Amino acid sequence: MKYEEIFARSFSRHDQNRFRSGALLACFVILWCMCTVFKPYLGTLPVYPEVEKTTLICDTSKPRYDSCEMKGDVRIQGNSSTIFVFSSQLTNASMTIKPYARKGDESAMESVTTFTIKSVQDKPETMIKCNKTHNVPAIVFSVGGYAGNNFHAFTDVIIPLYAKSREFNREVKFLVTDNRLSWSRKFHELLKKLSRYEIIDIDHENEVNCFPGVVVGLGKEERKELHLESVKDFTSFLRSSYSLDRSTTENLTNGLTKKPRLLIVSRSKTRTFVNIKEVVHVAQDSGFEVIVTEMNANLTRVSQLVNSCDVMLGVHGAGLTNMVFLPENGVLIQIVPWGNMDWIANTYFGDPSKAMGLKYIEYKISQGESSLIDQYPLNHQVLVDPFSIQRKGWGVYKSIYLDKQNVTLNITRFKETLSRALEFLHS
Ligand SMILES: *[C@@H]1O[C@H](CO)[C@@H](O)[C@H](O)[C@H]1NC(C)=O
Ligand SMILES: *[C@@H]1O[C@H](CO)[C@@H](O)[C@H](O)[C@H]1NC(C)=O
Ligand SMILES: *[C@@H]1O[C@H](CO)[C@@H](O)[C@H](O)[C@H]1NC(C)=O
Ligand SMILES: *[C@@H]1O[C@H](CO)[C@@H](O)[C@H](O)[C@H]1NC(C)=O
Ligand SMILES: *[C@@H]1O[C@H](CO)[C@@H](O)[C@H](O)[C@H]1NC(C)=O
Ligand SMILES: *[C@@H]1O[C@H](CO)[C@@H](O)[C@H](O)[C@H]1NC(C)=O
Ligand SMILES: *[C@@H]1O[C@H](CO)[C@@H](O)[C@H](O)[C@H]1NC(C)=O
Image (tube, rainbow, N blue to C red):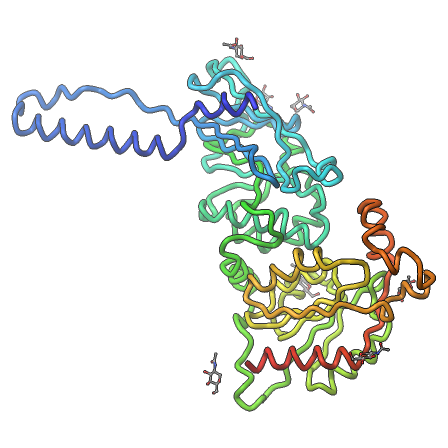
């Protein structure tokens, strides 16, 4: 794309640092020479022009997100979602960016604000003036898209934000677009740990905010969900943010002084456990202390509850995202409903749980355990060929398999799963 060429012309921070240290070295050499050879002329050191520090680098090559990083004189007119970078080193150019990490997913991206980035060659004085000048850089991100969903909040926003903001050591301001009060309230504890400043609702800023640097758009390097290179650092960051005691499950081989705790994530409208009472009983008989909850308390409470447990069990769904609070070596049991769901089950929770240092058990339900057999004749496409429904699109697929399916666990088989979980805890 054309604008990438234009923006690539500004030099990177790395190059600048090299340039600066090169200049410094040259200074020392000159100083040394003057001191030793031309002592009388020490006062007439040559004056070097100040190196201007403007950079604007945009990357649109990533599969999940676009991002632009600017350093120098950056001015944001929040209410028009426009960002100006001023520098004689840049050409006049303009590009747009949506700061949310589901690029290519139209239904997610349609509710994400588009920012326009303009690089301007002229002198700032002739252009838009600063009303507020900040002395730390800013990160612009959206909490639109799917961010209202717990899973997406973590994978699309919190994890990329954590990964990017660490380098600033809390000396960064968060400019949130498409903000919802409930969202920033829910994640307040975490945001506070990543930035020492109040978040700014940038869409409602009528004044021009000026920063020494701005990052717009965040994402992960890979397509993997709930993932980053050092995901265990992330879970340990969560534990410290919420003051959670347990970094790993206790060593249960020493005489089982305490019963292991099993948390059952219940749901009330869809993907519910029809025989929850039996499920609880068999788990208690297997030696667990059982807690059943819907996970709709605030994150402080949820994180404490999850962290106090050793095993988390639930039907595929956003509630399982709370596995991020489990102690290491804890066990996640995912109940996978009928409907050819192996790929999403693994991608969303199976693989991520293993990367976090958890043990993972998948319990794929049989046709007989699905409420779909009460809704469709046994030879119906929905039961015999879920793949054909998948081909009709996500909306159709979701409306059947995710929105209208409950599960009745086969207690005999489930008991075997619980034994495996216990073995994991004892090993
Ligand atoms: C760059 O843009 C500014 C502001 O829009 C304009 O005043 C100026 O003439 C432009 N410069 C060039 C070289 O096009
Ligand atoms: C943004 O705010 C400024 C200052 O209050 C106002 O002049 C301008 O019209 C606003 N722009 C938009 C797009 O609302
Ligand atoms: C921002 O600064 C400009 C130029 O100094 C001024 O005209 C404008 O009224 C200021 N806007 C606000 C909202 O204070
Ligand atoms: C758990 O306890 C057993 C028996 O005391 C011991 O051999 C083992 O090293 C312990 N494991 C951990 C991880 O502490
Ligand atoms: C979370 O809920 C608990 C109890 O319901 C309450 O004491 C606490 O203040 C809440 N925390 C936040 C951050 O809302
Ligand atoms: C699933 O269970 C919930 C809660 O009992 C119920 O409201 C819903 O109608 C059930 N759905 C189906 C498809 O059976
Ligand atoms: C329940 O699971 C057990 C063990 O896998 C199996 O033998 C039995 O046939 C299942 N019961 C039903 C009703 O499918």
